[in-house]
Image: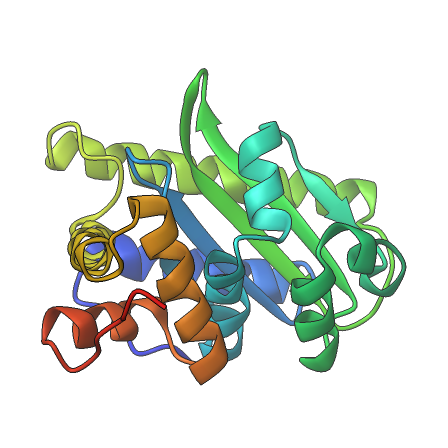
Length: 220
């Protein structure tokens, strides 16, 4: 189990992910939010393995979470081995190595407002049944309600305080790397993601090393 977060909204979303696992015969579930700069932040997961699968999409910049947010519609991959390699060459391989055979991503949105994505991971291939799809959509709606409740408590913020704190640190690290490499913010994020992937580390941990000046990027 993921340790219970201090933020009550995050804790409730972690429990929602755990309910998704138990009620949909899944291996794992994770939820990411979209910040104002269209950067993703991991917010909740059912367990550490789900957390890694969820964040790996943010590190690589590819995966069902990214596609579902961009298309604003569910991405339902019943057989990752069949559909995944052409869509997400790196992520599909990593998911397969982790024992994942099917992935289903549900965007969390209200009208034009994009809040995030709920991902469901399964160890066996096969589509969701009609009742399972309805259950998944119900859980996605519940997640939207929780995120909107959090907005009501925190003004017009688009995610909980815990997730936003991570976004601020990541953005600060981006700015520092941008100066170090003499490039753009986008190029800085590519370098940070590449380092996190190569070292098998979380983005937020890499960002904190950059801010603490324990990690430095050169122009090459």
